[in-house]
Image (tube, rainbow, N blue to C red):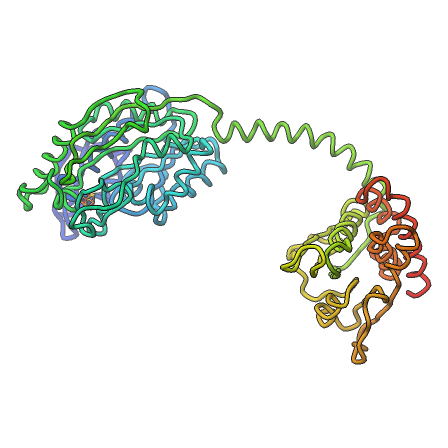
Length: 519
Ligand code: SF4
């Protein structure tokens, strides 16, 4: 017979099973049809697996929210990672994303931030959420990000054969822990709550009604909501552990059902219990003998988006004030001129103000000369007294690459910096040195222009040898002519300690005059 794909949105049908050469297809009217991708059925899950129940509960909660709360399901996005549970994203007829292992939450974070209107739901397994993606889980909870995370916990990595995972109970068996798990598992509700989740609950798949009710609450909760669903893994986990042992291995459906019943028998509902005490107890054989379930935490506090928007408002007010000051500064700037990308390397040792000098140039260009500028800095492994370098790029066009490729201008204030940088200067580049601190070797490059000034001596004579960098800046400004003298002076006045402004401006002008004379 020919397989027919379901398009139940437009064509409801009577439920039938049809066999085709491509496999069996289920078609027909089913209460969940409009939210299931029938063309993806039959599903890959084993008989007796709890995932079918988890999916049914999830879909019925969405349908309830659509019908009773007017939810627009076109604004719902489902994200999953890898594993048996991860297949859910492929089965729901919603905008869904089956992402890479452990990365469902970062993907969901991006979706939510880019489009806060979306209701973003992560539904994945314990290995994906608490193992591979554990770090993302705690940080999304910490931020109280407005998403819902549903973790179907079957206590092992089921899809890959039943390896021990982050929630495998202590002493329980798994294919990689055949003599008992010697690690201790996460208590997921406690982990979520301790990390900052504002809604936390747990049910087993046999608590279908409670699960529906909880999922509706979790999905409408404004903040990070977390629901753990304990589900039997009839094929892998149950095979190794007392709950499923002795049951007919050929009859997985029965095994799954018995395990589910076991979970229900040992389940104890305790709403409002501190998540720390929401344990899953096992005996010495690793058999689960108590599962605490219920709604453990419900808190209302600003979610990530709200908290961020509050801060944006504060920043905007602050910016309005700053902008007024900035407008005043920019009005000082001389009309924007054309400057090709110009790379400047500054070098010396720690304490000479090499970083400050780079910053002053960058600020003069960007703030007072209305140009684009990019400033980066690098220290040697030592602190004060060790090698120090800073780099500035100036251009009248946007700067796309922030690192120097071949500087054409260089300010050097130590022998070490000369040795380190001189060979990187472009042919015909300009090298400015403090000529009392840098001795040029006999084989000094002749393909560059080299000019010197006793900057440290000038600064010392002016009363502060720490202003030697400002002397070099004056010298550089006059020789290169990239940034205006006025812009540099404004930048210096804003950057140096108030008491030293006059001294710095004096030595800057001395350097500038020397630059005009030599340049
Ligand atoms: S391996 Fe376990 S979790 Fe995966 S589909 Fe089968 S029963 Fe379900």
